[in-house]
Length: 558
Figure 1 (cartoon, rainbow, N blue to C red):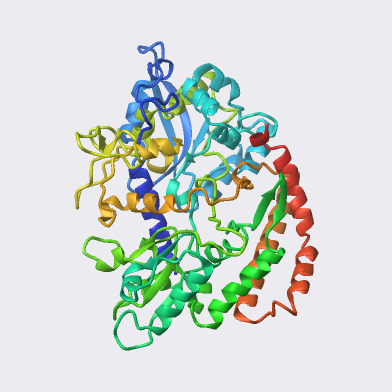
Figure 2: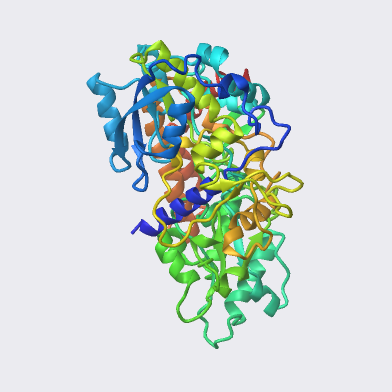
């Protein structure tokens, strides 16, 4: 039942790969001219290549051994890879078996969205000596990584453990539209037909949904309109966060807030109760599709693409392709446009998740690595911190998968000089096998992605990223001044299991109780105090204590 969700994720991930552009010309950490220290081949070109054993996860359309980027690295750095190639299915288990056996390779280069080393893994295996700290290697052989960390403290905190050591490098990909996942897309053709304006407040939104339900905006004479829907999966499709953000900030993950440096939960506050009451009022009037709390993405899309004609008024989602077909020729797609964050009684927040960063590391060196292999590998990764190296790695080789821009082409970002344009694939064309796909994603800050060529017609599916970018600009800046940086938090390995259990139990309890309050199975007046007591019984205080300790020792604060 989750295939459609997975395919949607793959679409977005592949689109993000296509949009991996270079940074502006004045960037030092990702310049179009790589540092000479990194770009130069190893000193003894005539010497025997350094053999390097690598555990890698390979997509079905790749062949790492014959891959053009593999050959490019081997030639550039006088190396020869000995890959232990693992398919995506069962990747995590096979990595764990590899480590447990003791017969592990010199390095792991993984695909972050498939599997990678968690922060707990890094601390555990780092302290055991299985994983090598990278600090000295970066200082001596990786000028581009050093410059990137100096320029961007967020990157440094992302990869630095509380003990100051860097045990691995992650996928630092700042996806702008992903960083504000909880968007709302409304049928503007219905707004126009009913002579309604784009809603600005929570009460405006309620009135619009009421009009959608009662005024037959699809004109078929039937009361078949679904004013608002969503689903229960990821990608911002849950309806509660967008609606709750007019009352109290909802992170749509763990319901954590940061106030004056102190970690707290939003879910026991009076504003949370007030937000639930508002959402319940929508539900009671039949303005929220009950399926929004139970259905998957496939069922959600059946509403957005109703065979008998449009019935959906508004849909929650990071992007509209989740619930409506955006392919060329689909007229319905252009009808759905973003609703700015609604102003409620206590604010106008937008959920922000740190740019889509996933804590952990996709690249590590083990204690099996020879000194020559260590140097060659860190230089290779350092090369992938340049525009040329990162684009060749993530998108494919120049002249095959990308080219330099032509006169008149424009970049995704406003006022940014375009630097990279993709070369579209042709139907029936065999895989180009020229890049490392998810394996090659190392350093894609926002300015890098903003400089990618993108057309200006936002309703052309070829320019979908611009549509999402422009929509996200409406949400930018609506996050609280303080955000709990879950991606930069390293929990003590001795507390990891306890924190994980507490996190799961507390989140499930909040989710289930919120739904019960909205649907009327619990009464907000009679049962609220018992609900708050239930949170205490689940040791929410202890959970916050663990997170506070981790936050206080995090590199982001140093």
